[in-house]
Image 1 (cartoon, rainbow over the protein chains, first blue to last red):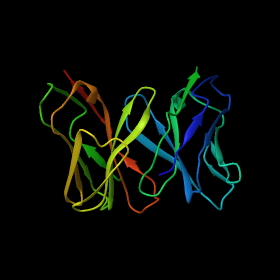
Image 2 (image 1 turned 60 degrees about the horizontal axis):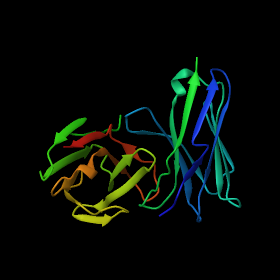
Image 3 (image 1 turned 30 degrees about the vertical axis):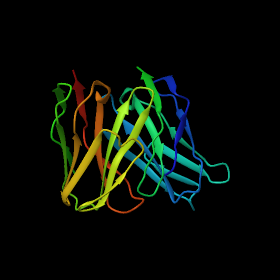
Image 4 (image 1 turned 45 degrees about the vertical axis):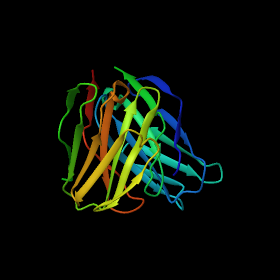
Length: 108
Length: 112
């Protein structure tokens, strides 16, 4: 199993600002994935970055991966109130392990 | 669109009851998962299944069992519910070993 640990635990920003959250993991990976969870709901897949990729974009999302440091970052540009959610990273083969997430609050 | 459906959004049960949580996916995925989510503890894997009638324990299987008789359905069973099993339960499925997971909306279970 693989561990994803997100940092910071909580983040509060103004609408229009960028939000950056980080993820660290412990062992080698095939890919790393980011998910979003709105309050009290299931997780929604945001983006998957493979171990041989260094950066990936999807709309306002930018993910980087540094396998030498076993870390990844998720950048949300021009944040909106609707981005308020918890964000999780994970990787694994069969046994996906999630951390406690980063709780992002975007203030209007 | 792909769909993972959990049978109940909210469930209230009494201590000692046998509880069934059902999950159905319509994507022909081989792999299905059950997690529980508690404040400050994140998502913890209870059981997963990589094929019909196949199952493997996750990190916290104690007090739970699972059943996968058909590919599309994965059931979580609490043999004798206890108050410490009050939690949010999330079901997910994936196609391959390392693919993206599709989650259900979750079942918030309260055991009184």
